[in-house]
Amino acid sequence: MLRDLFFTFFKIGLFTFGGGYAMIPLIQREAIEKKKWCSVDEFLNIIAIAESTPGPIAVNSATFIGYKQKGVLGAFFATLGVVLPSFVIILLISLFLVQFKDNTIVANAFQGVRIAVAILVLGAGLKLMRKLKKHWLTIVLIIAGFILMLFHWLPTIFVILIGGIIGIMYQTIVTWIEVAKRG
Amino acid sequence: MDKIWLLFITFFKVGLFTFGGGYAMIPMIEEEVLKHGWLNSVDLLVDFIAISESTPGPFAINIATFIGFDEAGLWGAIAATLGVVLPSFIIILFIARFFTRFAKNPTVNGFLSGVKPMVVGILVAVGVGLLCRSTIHTDLFHLSDWVFDPRTWVIAAVLLGIRLIRPKMNPIYLILFAAILGIVAYSLISI
Image (cartoon, rainbow over all chains, first blue to last red; front, side):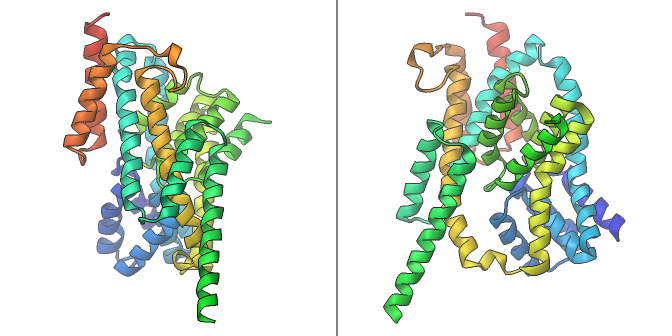
């Protein structure tokens, strides 16, 4: 069973490029349809949890499904399986990159590639923006995050934490008002 | 502090705050890379983002492995990767054991309702920053340092056009195409 968890998640780790939501269909096919390790409802719950916690969805799902199957050891082997392929591949690439980064053609290629990366990051931000609820506080926080980061006024971790604290405060106030209205 | 330990602690911190997918880690990692003088240049970080996008596995793990290896070899790679994975591993174990209704908890929801828009703002700012660095080779506010290179603008316009026409295209193809454009523009056309 532990070996099965390890190899299934190894396969999932090996075949997902880009990470994130790209791995959801693969996890669904391998862990749910083939192995029946959890139901579709449970899996939707796992995705909701993965979205609410830090870290990549792949790692979160591996840990969760591994734990549900075989406890802490299961979680360990499933997570190890999902992490190992990219770990090994990146080690090999690091060796290669160090040797080739001063090559002129490689350097020229990266002149173009850096622009592509910028466009991809911008695209990811705009795509996430469309998924947010339309609400005045959301818009204020997007603008605040943008300005704080553009001018590098605060470390990123503080900016993220400020967002979270404002979110909790807003939620608490809204709940108070609702209780007061009813009461 | 021992380098291996520093890598572990740094990536543990980064892993703890990575909400909203891998790209949200970029500014955090950039701050750490600058602070500790890792990687020799921030450009290498951007190059690595492209490599990470073209190889399997989540971005968070790829970048940790890469920086760890570059700084302290195999043990550095292991320490950084372990550091970035451990926070989510522990949190998920805790949730799976005690708290499966975690995603419906009002405090968690309140926290995330503030974190998500903040992360979007951060990502857009990071994208703008990267676009400036890759085209005008400085940041937006150093007007006098702006570099105008027509080759860059052509590449940027072509890539942006492709992205707008085919928004669902696999990022790997965009990166490969950008690499070809870069080689053609910078190797064959000298200004």
